[in-house]
Image (cartoon, rainbow, N blue to C red; front, top):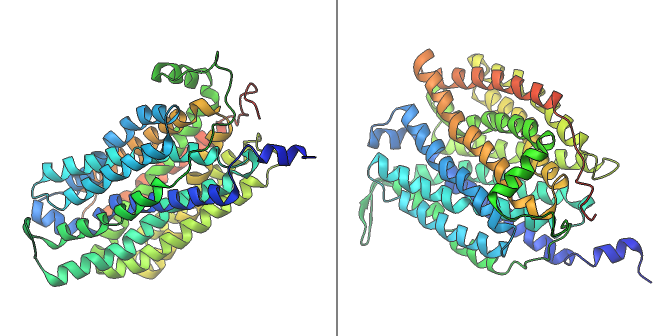
Length: 443
């Protein structure tokens, strides 16, 4: 005779199938971040070839990618709530892989800008569908750890992008211009884009074999709705569960993406580190610190008494962000610390900031019924990427260009912006009201 727990578990895929899904999606997330992050290791060579200021470069790294990534996420999230999520991800991979390669053909600012837009379009298909797939592959009380592991892919991708990208950039620079059949002569930074685009071929094959699970925790047909207007109506009807939390975490994303965008340039300009040195040292610290941070956040959140209890998600994010803020100021204002200590301090900051990265999606999945999960995650990603990635690096560059001078200007600008915005995020998380899942959802 089946126990209640074993009967419930039979509704979900086998553990081997579920974990294959998580690991492949984690790999996909890692590759996506490598493709979007490689740009930050080539600030100076790209800026020199295309005659760009820091503000213009920030548009390539942030706004060009984030604009369509953010806006397309919502309709793609709506599609993920109705159609096969594994196929949506597959098509997204093919698009962003192609557009990353096209970055390597850019010879002008606007060409690189449009190619970066295309990368954002493709990558917009991943997370709304991925979080929904993971939710339907694991029991509710077991979801935070798989989501943590999936999200580790993002920061593993950043770390790998710095480590691998640093080697690629240095290798291409040492070999000078490269002649490619049909294309002709290309610059070293252009060759780097072709190299990092190549893993998407293997990734597409792996995603093809992901099994689409049945949808769980669906509310009654009478209450469900698939249109964008209906999901925004649902969002505003439960704004206490979403608005302040999403806004605060979008502000925290400015701190994260600001570090990823400008720390490599700061280390090169102030301490004279080469791309391979930055990649190896900063990349490994990012990889280790963020992975430990997300696993820690997932572990601590899963120790709550009930998966309906969302309090740990909010409070853990608040305290972790508060601890990171003063460390950011120290890292960029005390130059006598040396490059090694600065990188270590950044690693500790990213450890704490990565709590929010994994706790936010887990919280949103816990308080949202199945048929709205893809769209709610898409709204969250819309805010995080438009504010954190789109506006954040550009805001920092504008502050640097207008209020600071010297090689350390970008670091001081980042620290000031991050400290102020981080404290605002802490206040918003302090006054946000943790919520429970809609009681009409069949748990």
